[in-house]
Length: 355
Image (cartoon, rainbow, N blue to C red; front, side):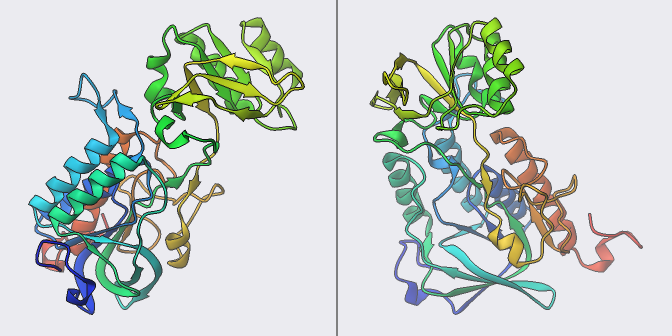
């Protein structure tokens, strides 16, 4: 694809042909790429640097890392590992896709990143990309793949405020399973208006008794009064107000300021936002992939979709629990299933369908 220094797009072939194209370069996509490349399949990872793995969170529940490991570091190491076995990297965003016979034709447009992640993490990823020979797609780079794995992830509707990007994953969180332990004995705010937000606040009682919940919108909470009474009975202050600001410094949120008449300022050390992430499913829709009511890609236990030769893994799927360990597992499963799909008929047991 290039001479190893990320030289200009004129050196790109008009058509890149591979056994498998992986769309998405987070933990799920990179796990798929590593395992497919180790199975001697030609792989290209198409990524736009617009995913969760570039934020500042540290994963402390991933087996084998007792002191934790930053998600951005998992991404860097995963890219190095995939490249070691021959996977290639294309920076860009898939603008269109269609079935072409038994293969998939993708049209990839150049992309300079979509805004996710901290500046430092993005810069490190760019530097590594150059050293690995990652190249920028041109206006309409074509990729023909015999199989396809979608690891497109989600979009998070984080609150917007000055300094937010440095706070995400450091003092602004979204997953109690991942980061609840770090709340032990600390002052925590939950921002959300629905039953999931109420449950999150109550679940945090296993870690701390210093909990505040704010509806985060002018309309207040959307739960029965009995649930607000449950909060009060457990010592959790509930405020039916939006949050107008998140004072912070160097990635540390120091307080939430409510939109009540008195502009109440509540000191906090951690904030959990309860929101419904939106699956990045545009490519799946274009290819006729089945989605559930929330827009997530419907997959089986081997990560296959309803489209033969097309698999999905990670946050965008219906069975994913939005943890890095699960994403890595699903990427591996998708790779094994795609590899089986690519076997010649003689390599498969008679009457054996798709894995």
